[in-house]
Amino acid sequence: MIFNFVGFLLFCFSLHSVEIGTPFTKKATKVVLCGAGELGKELTIELQRLGVEVVAVDRYEHAPAMQVAHRSYVIDVRDQEALYHLIRKENPTFIVPELESISTEALLQLEAEGYRVIPTASAAHTTMNREKIRKLAAEELGLKTSPYLFVETKEALYEAIQELGLPCVIKPIISSSGKGQSVIRNLEEVDAAWDYAQTGGRGSSKKSIVEGFIDFDYEITLLTVRHKGGTTFCPPIGHLQIDGDYRESWQPQPMGREVEEKAKQIAQAITDRLGGTGIFGVELFIQGEEVYFSEVSPRPHDTGLVTLISQNLSEFALHARAILDLPIPLITCYGPSASSALLVHGHTWSICYQNLEKALQEPLTELRLFGKPNVEGHRRMGVALARGDDLEQAKYKARQVTETIQIETE
Image 1 (cartoon, rainbow, N blue to C red):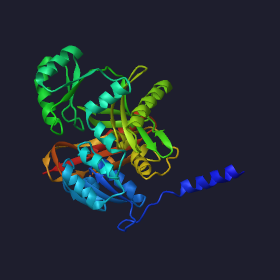
Image 2: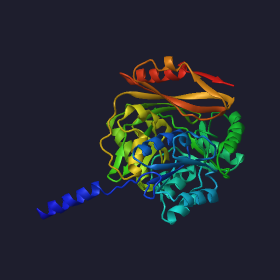
Image 3: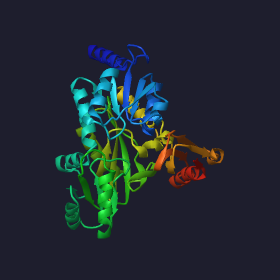
Image 4: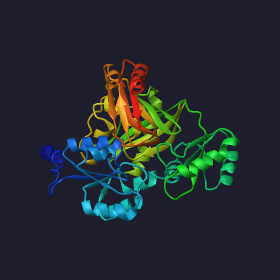
């Protein structure tokens, strides 16, 4: 009886141990969001719903998350000294990276001083570099991956192709949204692929990873949430990428129970090794009954935008709860759902979206316009969301939204 009473007291204490202060006061629970894109915008909204003060930081003015944050700064988050001094000035409760291209050296230094980085500074440092994360997954953890080699010269690329065969994929070791990534199908494409990898990467490194091509059946993102109560998985998300950049996603991706269990085991192994709390987007290739690790992002994933309509708790709500050590209850999937990215092409600082009343006339469709101020080439400017009776209907409805919207640029 005494044991049960003590357990009850501990249970009550755990339920009331999380405190959230009021924004703009000395007791505010404050997040500095490093990167203020569309994913950061949705995370900011979820954090503010829980009373958190959010400071958004990015390299350009009027980034999406800046439009909803309590305040913002424009700095180059790759600049170690600038990022370090901004964090020391704001003195946040949490530092939350939203993008790959960030000074992880500053994060490591700040974490050593006692600041809490989400999920950890080490996780951000490891996952931003394809060489580090691939070696961790394949060589340390023994996870199945595509065959790979690292190259620093065009001559080494030709040698890698000879060993790995064609087709193969080349990616800068540090990049995002498919920048610098190419599929090489014949030797005539090597020079252009090498040049693109050199210009599309971020940071000073000229090194690239060359991967042997896996003829996979489909690829998934397994959103994996590490939180105070353990590890929770969202239903698998299928997705379409073009040149390494997300175009469509859908949930739940149909797959066998045993294959899904293998995917969860791989996701748990890599996220346990990275540690910390928060949501991870684990990308996996599925070939028959085999599951191959591809990449992992220690933050909300662009393919997870579908969860804004598919789940009771979106990936952003889950990330916010995990950051704040709040409970992650049962995740409910509402049914077949899909997202479709809205791309805008051109070179302009003036963008107007038209025909929205027709685009959104179907039931169970939604639209998020990110509010990005400009386009240089092509850029993801919004996302359509839809639910349907089955996945094909959900995908069709989401595509219809993006295809019906008219874009006016000057």
